[in-house]
Length: 257
Image (tube, rainbow, N blue to C red; front, side, top):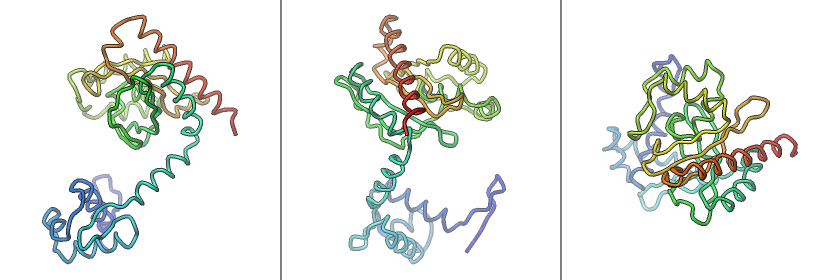
């Protein structure tokens, strides 16, 4: 068993790192043989074969006559993880109603590590089909749903996230830390965030924070074509609707079992 220190000083098992390298490779290639894995990861075929057999023994990788692929055990684990989250259960009915009322795509997301993570979405009658999926990870600063979470982090945590280089996803992504701090202060004051084209060109987001005793649990948002946010009356209607939905979710969160 080989152990190495990474740049943070944390001790890491190389065998676990290698196993997840193979998992990610199987996802990218939609299946591979030991020879293909060996070529991509610069290991021997026998080493690749041993890893693949071990992963197959767990049930998370399948083996079809020497072609290895990810198994649906990952889906089962992800679904169970989603349903273990209390916010998911409380928010889901209100998301459905929000999607029906607005006709748009409605979602709820949470923070994990340095990312905003999509927990669940519901699609309205004219809602966008973006191919989003639970577990999708995006940077907080790139869209309104992430910004309302970032805005309500403790100041020290917020400063940590704004200290590094901020990725520019589109021409409209705000990457200047000082400009972001001003925007986040406005979000805290107004209780809602709106962005257009920050994460995807042509897409707008209206989001409100989900706060329990000043602790940020996540965000509730409506996603729509950015053109629908050009009209002030439409923007205000969505701002009010999303914030009211977020308030309802948190009332139910506090008082439901």
